[in-house]
Image 1 (tube, helix red, strand yellow):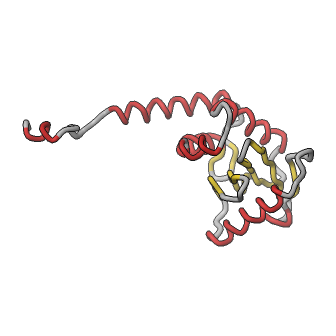
Image 2: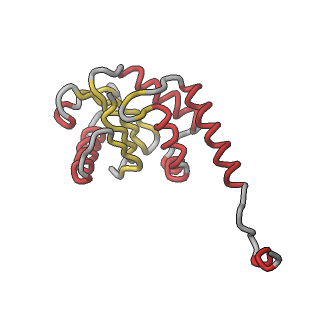
Length: 163
């Protein structure tokens, strides 16, 4: 089961945090700080996998991918496969955003949420195929674009006078 998904910049500011177990806001912030403290102190040439027992409790694992100024972090229990999660992060993000950077996350916040919702629901991994995830994200983007083009209110004041 996935316990949390976090996107943290290299200054420690969380850009996205989804916790799939109920935690108070103070506890969430404490966990984000703890994860960032561990990640920023790790050398570049070490594994992207680590035990997170001391942060999230027994049988917790953490997988992260460092892109430019962002850390993409998945925290899960021993039921999930670390390599599969890392591969999913890499493939999906590379397909969605050519070169992932912090501005992509800031300006495409809803797209990132859509991607995460396609992958994980309630802590359970729903989809592992990045092609299927991309297909769903493109369909949702098309629906959003078409709904934005429909206007129910005239754009000018003169349109109201002619009614």
